[in-house]
Length: 408
Image (cartoon, rainbow, N blue to C red; front, side, top):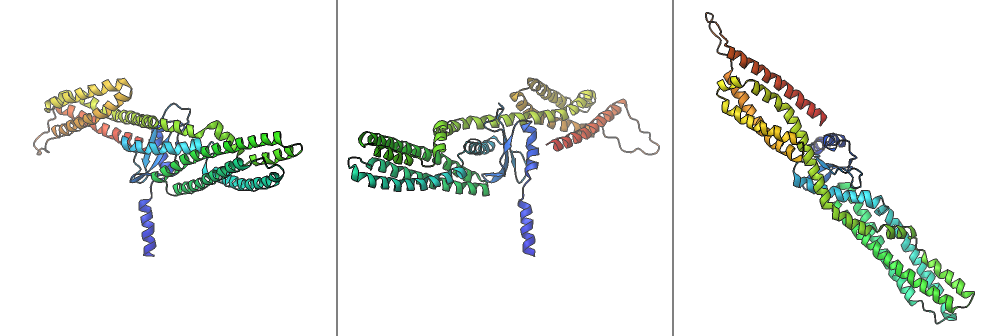
């Protein structure tokens, strides 16, 4: 019983956030764009992440990647780490959005290729039978080159079928553990499979050409009706059960497409990470600005009081920083938001210092004795108003943060 409780407790400790929770955190950055995601957290390095991004074939011009750490629920801000995650997401998308969508998944290829192997083996037996019946009556007709090309085609089809079976097994491995290493291996299998299919269909072309040449010789050297019967018997060998796959492969050229997609990968990753960084800077700086502008306005309205408290230098420094904040805010672009995120923490630090000193400076005096009368000067009243504004700000700040948490 104790062991069971320990196992359950351990499971609770390692359990991460749900997909809905991760999606909610990512939604502020994805806006209403057609985002997609992996079905489970992807392990990249030492942690696992829920990954959201715009599909690589999306009609939307925007590219963006958002990653939420599964265990902590924190958004990934580090550009280098986010780039590594984005690179894996891109490869995953190539598999899902291109290879599988075009009918090149291992689940589809494996049974088709295994069936083709059986068909080719039957065709070999048929060719041997045709040759045996023909060679006696027409010894000048050679089946050697056709037989050799059929043997090569069978070997290549068998190798491609084995590779597809291994790839299908790797697909199951990836789906069971969702790690970047198993995804990388799966992607390599797909690349190797597309190369193998290319070699296979080259072998098929050679076999088909040999078959056509032999049919031509038969028609020109064998008298009717044997030439027609032999021609049709040979023609039956042409079908190996891969006609549709062959036609699609030749027209779509997936090897070339994969090469093109790989060439676009670096820019996609770079653009997606840059887009997230921009949106993060915009959202964070705008939210922090809306909070700190309240405190800054209180300081501006209370400068006389603050000068009396010996805070003139600090107020001037704050005004310089805030002037820069307003300048970059007006730019309304990626650089401006990034600069705001650099400057606003400095403003926050100055504001915290000024408010703390103001609170001490305007603190009420010790309670007077019964025969003493408390005399609040006009200056003290101003400080009191400033403190009231500060209290109002803190309440506003609390509500703003609660609102931001709810929205995120």
